[in-house]
Length: 240
Image 1 (cartoon, one colour):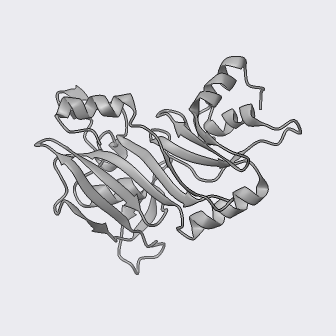
Image 2: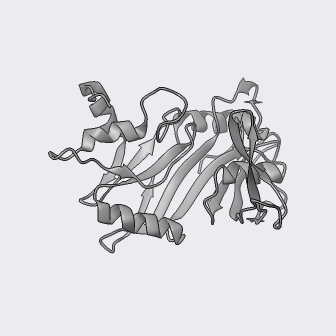
């Protein structure tokens, strides 16, 4: 991997919203991949080189966000911290809160929990998740809590809390109840709302709550990005 230029290093540091001896939290902007994929472009994982120690060791991401999802993402600065956070994720001890714009209206009922199993399916080179029966081969249990925060005739703002960590879980679950996330072409989301194009997948990782490797309870938050705030304003929906 090539060395980061001064501008790239400064950009990486500008994304950090919390740092101590064990962890770093970033506010990942939409359009930046967490790690390498089929698109040959810089990723957040690449940018962690800006935080490398003199011996060359650098932080490592402990989870991922989809390329077009914005918000809080954690990296560990040491192997013990990475192990601790990995176990916390597996044990569902890290609580995640997302915000999403869904359409065509608020979910019905406006608050609830989706427990529909999911399984991987391929469409050409693309992999997506689809709902399935619990006894289907490859079925994975999945659980998502949701709560409507604001609603209009065309769309709604919802809070989402994943209780499992399946790929595309929030996207597939909201589509399964007829309220796909706006901008999500893969799962049937609206590509235009309020008379204007939806600029991207309207999903934001707003907060993480967990006990850190040092034993302190943390709540790390990322502010709503401008493009999502602009869409809410165009729709007449109150910002959280």
